[in-house]
Structure formats: structure tokens, C-alpha cells
Image (cartoon, rainbow, N blue to C red):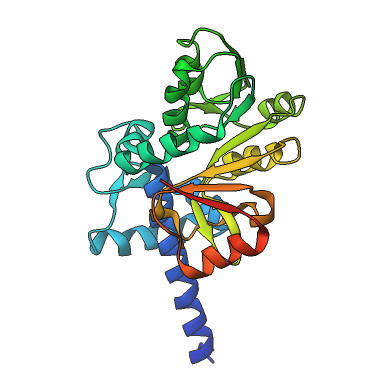
Length: 266
């Protein structure tokens, strides 16, 4: 006798799929293309399940199938890092300019591989007697142009989509430093869960920087509020400063205030 699925179980399955589809789209906003195998591993489902999800999103015009994977429509031509540089570029510039007020001569800075932190690195050109530590090849190349600044680069296998090194080697390397200010980009902010990202390796690297930092600043534009990130990086209590371009929603503002996180508006 055929076993019928209960209405409650069917509804739960639809809710689970809807959450997966939202997160899949958020992942594609962070990185231009993903393979079916990568997505299946991240969501802990079969590759056939991911293919069904992709077909559904493609029929709705939300994604484009490519050989062995998926991308946003028209997203196959531009390298992912360059694509992220163009997104919210004006807001990121204002945020970087605002964050510059947190930097003082003589500081040791840890800058992660975000595009907004790259904007901050460019603004450091006129400031001498700085020490900069980073896992980003783009930021390292920028700091090398600045006279009077010392540069330390956390090495390892470089991710071609992020132009940065992640994994155990850069984590171990960075643990020897105690920066005056650690500056992080972030993929998402949630009132209940705090600061989140979309890449497991990137999130692990950011988490590893928190214990050594004397002060932690997060730079992110307002599109990251309530975005469905799924890898936890930090709570509000771990972050001293949040620099953004618009006032956060009430629940996020309340969570920041309760934890003592200062919100700076660019």
C-alpha cells in the first residue's frame, strides 16, 4: 500500500525548500557562480535536489544554468571579485571614509578580504607608521604603494573568487598578531544571530581574528541588514563598531545598543 505524505510534512518540505532557494540566491549575490556539487555539499542535500532547485529558479528567470553549475542571469562574463567591487560602490566608498576616523598613526590594523575594506586600505595612503596585516592579495598590493607602512600577508592557497587566502595556514599566521583594530566586511546582519556570512572558509577566518583583536569594526552597507546569511561569524558583543550607510532597522539597532556596539553612519 502506498504511503501518503501528510499535509504537515509536505508544508514543512516546502518551507525548507523556500529557505534553501533564498539562501542559494544570496550565495549567488556573493559569488557569481557555484557548482552543483558545491551547493549540494553546503546544503547537505543530493545534487539532484539542487538541480531541481536550479530548474525552478531558472523557470522564474532568477538564475542561469551553466555547465556543471549555476550563476545569476548574465553573470558569467565578469570575474566575481570585480563584480563585487561594482556593487553598492558609492555606499562602500562613504563607509570606508567614515571608518577612516577609527584609524590612528602607529596602529596595527587587520583588514580582511572584503571590497569595502579594500576601499579603506586605499584611503590609508597618506597615513604613515601603520602596520597592516591582511589575507587579501588586493589589499596587499594596495598597501605596498604606501610609503611608511609595514605589510604582513597571511599566505596559503588563494581563492580565485575572493583573491584571498583562507584555511588553516592564514588562520595560524594571524594568531600571532594582536591588532589595535581588526576591520571586517560582512555578508549579512541579523538581530538575533548577529553577524553572518555565506562562505564557510571566509567565516572561519573572520572568527579566528576575534580573540586577538583589541577592537573590532564591521563595515557593511544597508543591503546586508536582514539578509539570509547562514554561517555565523560574531555576535554583537564581539563587535565594537558597526559602520554603515543607513540607520539599521529597529531590531538590529536595539541589539547593537544592548551589546554596546557603536553604530557609525556614513
